[in-house]
Image 1 (cartoon, rainbow, N blue to C red):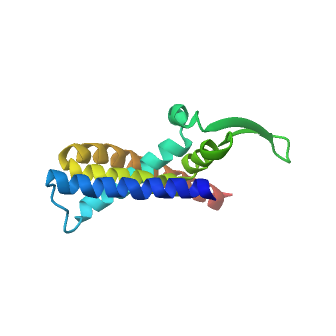
Image 2: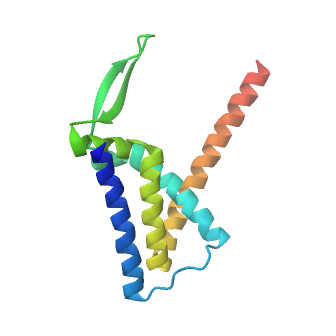
Image 3: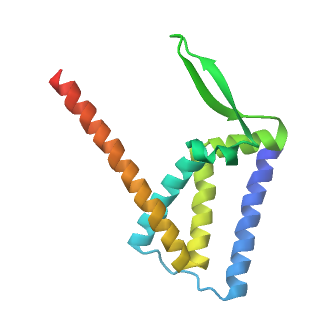
Length: 154
């Protein structure tokens, strides 16, 4: 339980450092978030979270905290999955990085900070990941439509 508290305290400390940085640099605090920026932040968070928590390309990020194990399902098929490894902080970090809901909060926070501190540079990153998220959502939608059409024709 204390280990989870460590990560919560770290998160709160990052918030404090961010607020102090905004004040020290004189960066204006946004009075509101425009609809397009909010959409880009949402889509980029969605895609980046999926990359960090699931994609092969990010295994290098997860490797210090996670290990791949082979599991046999009841039907006999073999499946490989990632699980947290070690004990203590390492294991809790593994749980955090494998959990899309948990990692998503940290990623959303980082992207928001980036958007406030360096809006022009951040917007390029947000657009890139936002477009990737849109493409992924269209692929998911197309697969759903295809499976629906196939099941209706059977």
